[in-house]
Image 1 (cartoon, rainbow, N blue to C red):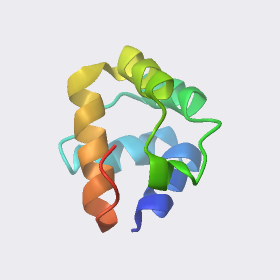
Image 2 (tube, rainbow, N blue to C red):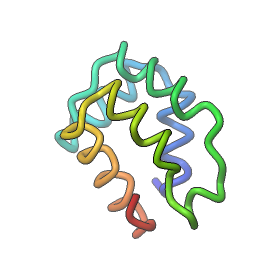
Image 3 (cartoon, rainbow, N blue to C red):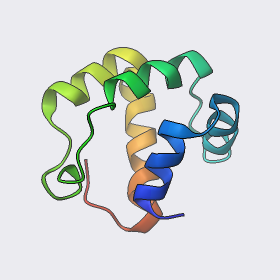
Image 4 (cartoon, rainbow, N blue to C red):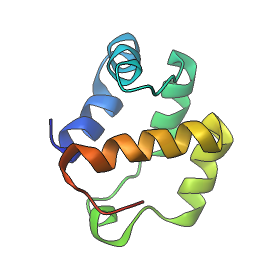
Length: 86
């Protein structure tokens, strides 16, 4: 699964499936946190693959899931296809 495919899956897949997928990689995010993250990332832009995620969006995501979970999630996204570090 490529980086953008994983992001689309996280945004549109069932919360249970997304949670199970991420748990395989040590990222323990609850269904309610997934729902909140979807709101945070609702206005995501493909440009972010080049420029990185805006600081305000990062801060909002960290408020939802905490620094450790955010870093684990971003590490998973990076490892998918060698994407730019967020």
